[in-house]
Image 1 (tube, each protein chain N blue to C red):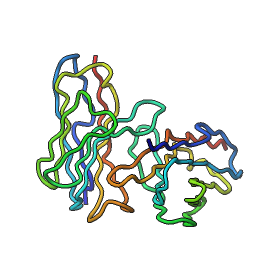
Image 2 (cartoon, helix red, strand yellow; image 1 turned 180 degrees about the vertical axis):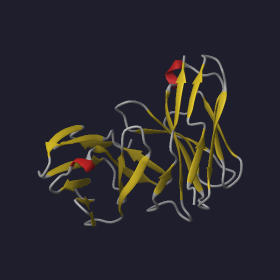
Image 3 (tube, rainbow over the protein chains, first blue to last red; image 1 turned 45 degrees about the vertical axis):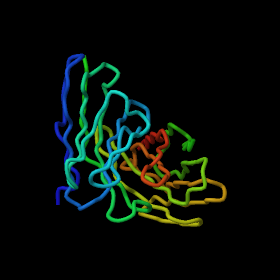
Image 4 (cartoon, one colour; image 1 turned 90 degrees about the horizontal axis):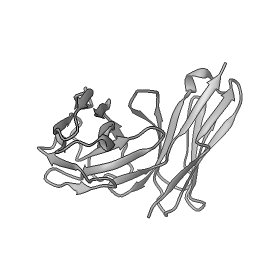
Length: 115
Length: 109
């Protein structure tokens, strides 16, 4: 059981380049999330998807777009990368059923550097 | 705005000692989570606390929740080096979790 799988694990981008972070879960979860984690800080929510076909902004959505491709997959796109987007990105999923009280499971993280 | 505050943010302690990490939050949520993160790694779920007075224990770690005080504690008993990590609490706000800044715990032999 792979759980939450995200790719790539490491990426270096030049300012202005675009890229997509991929995430897939095999736990039949309804809710999926993208977080960023900066040094010495907690997790900040970028976007989330409560169910297939829906997406909502989190705390720090500017500069990002997301797609909930199907129940399994939730991708994060940086259209024009900026150095401020240098961070570790975590995909996560939660479920099934109502989200409250359910554990969130995290992927291994994607280390992104924008130069 | 829901806020989650952890303290201390950094803790260095000796093996064998006891200590407590505190997590205060600003809403009436009754669902709180504790996670562990090792350096360069992902986050691992430790405890899910779903009601006032909930207490859960796993090995040397024990977590409790007081929803009236809006406070959760993570107590470490007779610390060992392997417990060195960063510990996060998070509070449930419907589809989102709101996270504390984390407590970096270093346990010295």
